[in-house]
Image 1 (spheres, rainbow, N blue to C red):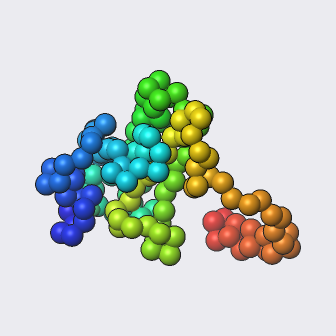
Image 2 (image 1 turned 90 degrees about the vertical axis):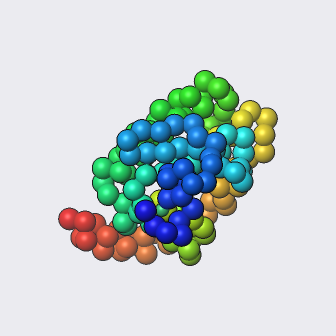
Image 3 (image 1 turned 30 degrees about the vertical axis):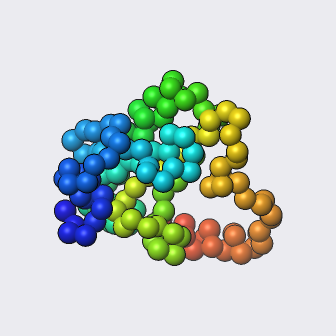
Length: 140
Ligand SMILES: [Zn+2]
């Protein structure tokens, strides 16, 4: 547990949450500042700041739980779709520095989600190809 981490305090029961799911490794609750109806967070109970730090077992548990949760969302909210969003680092607006996966449903008839609409414009294929080679070599 990290002293100043609001999500660790929620896991410890020191701060209340609108809990919807819990297992040995995972806690899930509704976001108090929802982008849409049903906006949910899924977090590992063990503190890890981001995707670079999270233990593989915790990562798998978070994503396994998210599959159960979106099934329940489908039955309860009947959404047009659900966006999964996970931010790593302050540079991409991660605010709480404890790994969390957002599950953001778009209920029928509501506005398009700001997190899943952007302008599509073709990139520089040469640059894309070069970067792919460099990253693939790192991963090979
Ligand atoms: Zn934490």
